[in-house]
Structures are given as C-alpha cells and as structure tokens.
Image (cartoon, rainbow, N blue to C red):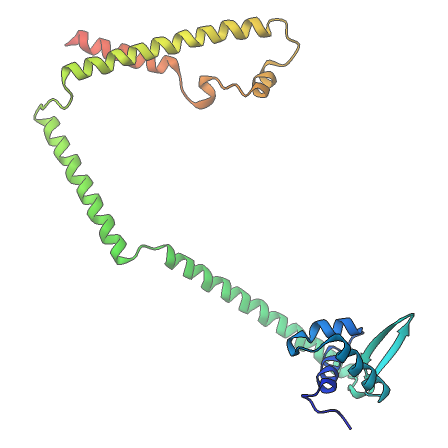
Length: 226
C-alpha cells in the first residue's frame, strides 16, 4: 500500500519518482528542505521505501544510491519515440519564436522608455525658447553696434593671451633642449621611449602652438587695418 502523499515517506517517494535518477540521501534531504525534513527522517523514509520494494537501491561501499522503480514507467515504442522527437522539435521552434517575440517587445519597451514624456518635452521646449531669446537679444545688441566687452577688459585679455603664448613657446623650447640632450645617444626607439614615459606632444592631443600664434597675429592685423 503506497504511503500517504503528505507523510514523510509519501513526500520522499514522490520526489524520487519525479526525479527518476540516481540519488543519495543527501541529495534528497537537500532538495526537501522546504518541507523542514531532517536528513535522519529522510534516510529512514528511504530505507523503509526500499525495504518495502517501492524504490530500488544499490550499495557502493558505504553509500546507498536510490532510484525509482522502472517497472512503473511506461516505455515508449519506436513510433512513440519518433513522435516525441517531432513534438520536441516543434516545441523548440515555438520556444525560439516566443523568445524572438519577447526580444522585440522588450526592444519596443526600451525605445518607448527612452522617449521624452510630454512634461519633459515642454520643459525642454521652454529651455530652448529661453536660450533662443537670449541669443536673439545678444545678436540684436551686436547689430546695433553695442560694445559687449569694454576696451580695457579686452586689452587685459589680449595681454594675458600673448603672455600665455610666450610661456607656451618657451616651455616647448626648454623641453626640446632637454629631450635632445637626454636622447642624443640613447639606443631606444624615441617613440617607444616617449610612450614609456607617458609623454604627449601638443599634436598628440590635437593642439598647435602655430595655430594659436596665427590667431594672435590675425588680431594684430585687424587692429592695424582699423
């Protein structure tokens, strides 16, 4: 007579039959922790079920391996196996299709989430309109000949600019003199040596002393023309 399904033996028997694979008592006890079953109770139930012939077991040294009785399972014939393979293939195709549909839906959700809400659109519109008004006001002042920068402030800025260019040129010269002295008899590849030291030339970061100097010369020419 099979044990009641809610008894310890019934729970253990149901699990072993459901798994239908070799199990030891620790495997069963770990899997049935949700039922608050102790390992000793699980071991006792396994021994009782095997003694009653409701499950099979084999001994490997000191360890017992338990397995569901195979005579309780219907063994499919060749036609049934073939049909099961076809059904499995169809299910795999359906699973692939569902995954593809899920991916498309998730992509659409991400696209929708990336769009601005109506409130955000209105806030951005207000900001852009404010910036546009400021630029229009500035343009209007320029068109009417209003001086936005005082002559004395402009002079201070230009003098500071010239001074920085001068410092830049001096430092480039000092570096070149030191670099030439250090690498004059060096057997190392200069490019590799520079990278090893972590040095960067102006050109490496997209700047040029010449271009800034030309900008200063252009400003002088404009003053002369006026």
